[in-house]
Length: 374
Image (tube, rainbow, N blue to C red; front, side, top):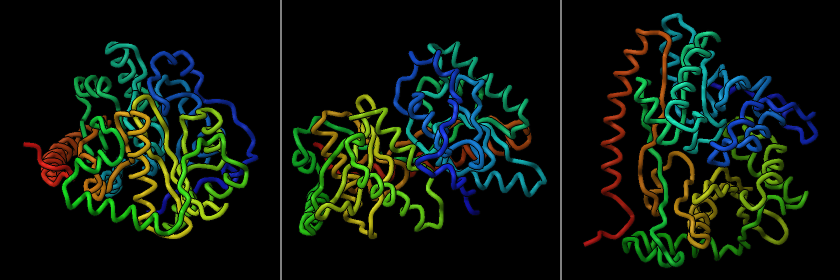
C-alpha cells in the first residue's frame, strides 16, 4: 500500500503561513507536560502542510486534545493495516478514523489534556462522541502517558501493546562507565564499531538547531528526505517544520552531525524534553550502518550521560538496540470501535497479541547487553 503523497506546496520553505488550528490548547498550557504536545510543535506541522489539506490528517480544532480525522494509517507507528483490510473485505469503511496522537512522533506523553481523572474521563467521552458524529469507524489514543492509560483502560477501551527499546541512565559518570557495565562481548563490539567510524575521519559534533546556517539547513533536510526517498516515499516533514521547531525550541532541539571538511555527510536530530532525550530522524549521504549506530545511538547515550538525562528514547522498533544497551519494554495504545462485532473480534486479537508481546519482551530481557549482577 503506497502512502498518500503530501502536497508539494506544503514542502516549500516559502509556503503561505496558515492560521493555527489549535486555539483550544491555549487553555491547556498548564497540563502540557512535554514538548511534543506544545502549540509550537503542533502548529509547525500544520503551518507548512505536513498535516492538513492533502495529507490525510485533518486537525479537529474544537477538541482540547491533539486529535485528527485520518483517511489512512501512515505516520502513526501503531500499525492497523490488517484491521483496515478486514473491514474492507466485509464491505465496511475503516476510514475515516479518529486519532488522538502527535503526528509522526511515536513518543509517549500526555494525550487527554486535563488536570485530573475526571477531566480525562470527559476528554475520552468527547473522543467517542466526536467519532460517532464524524462517521469515523473508531477512536484511537496512541502513546498515552500512564495517567491517561489508566483512565482509558478503566473506561473499557481496548488496550494494545507495542514493543520498544529505551536506554536508561544508571548514574554513569561518562560513556566509558556505561560501556564497562556491559558484558565483555558487547563492550568489545561497541568499541570496535566506534573505532571504525573514528578511523573514517568524520568530524562529529553537536549543534543546536537554531545555530545551523542556511547551507547547513539545505544539507540536513536533503539528508533527512533521502531516508524516505530510498523507500519510494515523500518525507513526512516539510523543511519549514524543522526550521520552525529549531527557532521555537532553541537548545531543546539538537543536531548531531558528521562532517568531512565543511560538508555534512550524515546527521541525526533530537529533542530534549525534561529528563529525556528523544531521537527523531536521521539521514546520510550514503548507506552506512556503523555511522547510523554512532550518530543515533552512541552519541545520544553520551549526550544523555553528559547532560544527566534519565532516559534516551531512540524511536520505535529495532532489536539491534538491545545489543547496544537499550532495554526492551512495552508501550500501550487504546482503541474504541463503533462496530460492536468488530470490537469483540479485535479485543480477542489484542489479548492474544499482548501475550505474544509480553513473552517476547521477557525473552529479550534474558539477552541483555549488561553484565549479570550477583
